[in-house]
Amino acid sequence: MDIAVTGGSGKLGRTVVRELRAAGHTVVNLDATGERGRGFVRVDLTDYGQTIDAILGVDDAHGGFDAIVHLAAIPAPAILSDVATFHNNIRVTYNVFQAARRAGIKNIVYASSETVLGLPFDVPPPYIPVDEDYPARPESTYSLVKHLEEQMAIELTRWDPSLKIVALRFSNVMEPADYAAFPSYDADARGRKWNLWGYIDARDGAQAIQKALEWDATGFDRFIIAAADTVMSRPNSELVAEVFPGVPLKRDDLDNNETLLSIDKARRVLGYDPQHSWRDEV
Image (cartoon, rainbow, N blue to C red; front, side, top):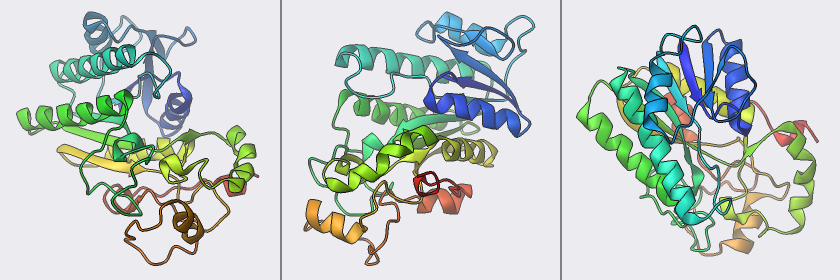
């Protein structure tokens, strides 16, 4: 496929661009920053004119796309003011979705977020492991935008039943260089309780994107994307008993380190199969 990756210069984006190219796809990075050359177009995605122009074609850089992977955003809460985060992220996502629709692109995969599950879980989750079955619980402006983006995608795919938009609720993205810090997390169970001790290796994030692009479907759907394990060496049963006593359990077999951000749906529907663990790197 000819694929546009917005935000392809970011932490997840760099790996996604590399892995999609390695799989044989032609990939163009649309971002505000990046290295000049073929495969990169500098675009201010807050400007709709620039966005749709870049998606339709840029001289000899590309002649249009079959699919869009939308990763561009202010990537977390508390980086900028709440208003700046809201205005930037909702505008950019609307611009990309609308430009894709005008260009006739029917295959969109984008980064939603684990934050819509209720992070930082100062109010405990309704059950553990968490999954996609309960309503979104945004607890920050950043998360509110992610929820509104999912609602927007629902309506856009209702307007056009031939359109596919897949929201991947990524956990905290990590690269191998980040894993040296992981053994220190065991000392304080509450230090990483904010996302149920979850993470996602960027390489597995790229795998999930490729699986979602290749998925033969229409309409909107959402998937939690996390590593197969937690960031902790301590067993889940011990962590949950200490930090979330009384929260109902959807599984009894918590005497292990299996992710508490359920990836069962992504495994079943997309064929997602995470291959990378911090335990192999440290």
